[in-house]
Every structure is written in structure tokens, then in C-alpha cells.
Amino acid sequence: MKRHLTILGIGLILFGLASEGSAQNYKKLAQSGMEFLNVKADARAMAMAGAVTTLEMGSGSLFFNPAGMANLNGTADFSISLNEWLADIRHTEMSVAFRPCKGKYGVFGASLQNVDYGDLQWTMVDLSQDRGYADLGKFSPSAFSVGLGYARSLTDRFAVGAQAHWVKQQLGENWLPAGVDSLKKEKNEVTPLSFDFGTNFKTGYKSLAFGMSIRNFSKEYKFESEGFQLPLTFTMGVSADLLDWIGTGGIDHSLLAVVDVAHYRSRPEQVMVGLDYTLFKLVSLRGGYVTEEDEDSFSFGIGAGFKGVGFDYAYTPFGVFDSVQRITARASF
Image (tube, rainbow, N blue to C red):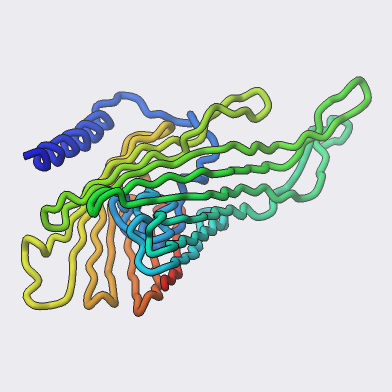
């Protein structure tokens, strides 16, 4: 009875979050900084529209729900992902997890997220020139995050996880007046600290599972005089293998369905739906859909894996911005 009440309660919360987003008459925009933290590179996850809160993805779970790292198979896990984002911006993610003493002390992990914005033109106001500005050459803004995480299974059904990030964003330099005839150079950078938390709960009823994560929790920081917080995101999800109800027909395959509901600090709520069909535990076909997106509602992908080594690819049509492609390589041993 308690189990069914728990499932019902989590379902009502998910429904309530979705209803709240549809009932709002306004859109939350520009209420947080460092939005690059919400742009993910993992190809398996993004082929399913990012609906992976309940999934166990090894060290890659550190980018979504650190609790998903708790039931790591083997001793170590490694992943690297590349995201060819819009405007030739490149996102790279790396993660590693270690499970010492067969999980007796839980699972430890580390993550790295880096953004390469390329070269931009650096100018400053200069009214002594006819064009009104001086060309100072090129500069290269950058952003990255380094995290340390930990996850542990408290029972055979319930797991928890957490991660601390050190984040840095460097947006170049500029010259400011320092007196009547002098200037001073200011560095535009900030280095906040943020935290992620998550849980996973396997109901024991077939493959039905629930998950929850809170990402990018931080205090307020400032760029010069403007205060901001990181893009806080609260997500709840549910997943199950649909073939548990339909039947496998004697074939070694699965059809995983996942639904996530996400509440953001700086944008409308979203519902994300993902499907992952895997045949003989070797090849996967994936698809996803996310609400409240203007250009990238649908996503698609494939994956292949054998003896702990896997590769994933995701393709997201992006309307007037063409498309976004992601690739991931992972290994566990």
C-alpha cells in the first residue's frame, strides 16, 4: 500500500509541475547567468530530448542526475562528448567514475564541461576616430565547469547523489575611465560555486522508476553591478521498459520510455519525452520531443555498444539555425 501511495504522490507532483507551466501567462527570461550549463553534449541523452533523470548512465549521469551513477557496473567508467552547437560554438564534456571495493564506499566521480566560443572582435569607443571606435584585435571568451560527485545506493531500490561544481566564465576585457586622461583594463570574469543533488527510486513494480534532480544551485553572484544566479533547474522523471507490459516475443530487446518535467529559473517549464529501443543489447534507436521550444522540439539518435565500449550519435534539427550534432564515446570496465 505504501509503495502505491508513493507512486501516486510522485505522479501528482509531476502533473502539477506540468500544469503550472501551462497555466502561466508570462515567460521567465534572462533571470540567470551562465546558461551554457544547461546546454548538454551527451549524445544518448540529447537524442531522447534530455529526458534521462531516471536512467543509470554511469559517469555521464553527473551532467543530469548524479544519483544515476550509484549502480555503476564494474570498477570504472569514462565518457567524452562533443556538441557542435550553434554559431560554431563547441561544447565538450568529459566524465569519469570510480567504484572502489565493489561499491562498499559508494561511487566517486568527476566531470568537466568546456565551451569554445571561438574568436570575437574586440573594440572600444573612441570618438577621436571617424568611425567612433578603436579596433583592439580579437579575443576569445571561454567558460568551463569542473565538478566532483558522489553517489550511493542506500537500498537495492533507492539511490542518492550529489556534485559540487567550480564554474568560471571569462568574457574578455574592456577599458574603463580611471581619471581625466587615463584608462584601466577590467577583466570580465566570475567564478561561482554550485551544487547538484539527485535521487533515483525503483518501485519494484516491473521496471517502473522515478527520479528527481536539482542542478546549478548557487548563491547570487555579480558581473560588475548586475547580480545573477546560475540556471537553477528542478527536474522530476518517470521511466519504464514498455515491453514489460507488451511482452518481448522471445527476442532480446527493450523499449525504454522516459518522461521528464523540468522547472527552470529563467525559462518556461518543459515536458521532455524520450524513447530508446535496444536490440540484443548492441544497437539502439532513439527519439525525443520537448515542449516550449521554438526551433528544436524533436531529436533523433543511434547508439552501439559491445563489452563495455559504446558510441552514440544525436541529431537535432534546429529550424532556421540548421542542425546540432552530438557524439559520445564511453567505456566501462
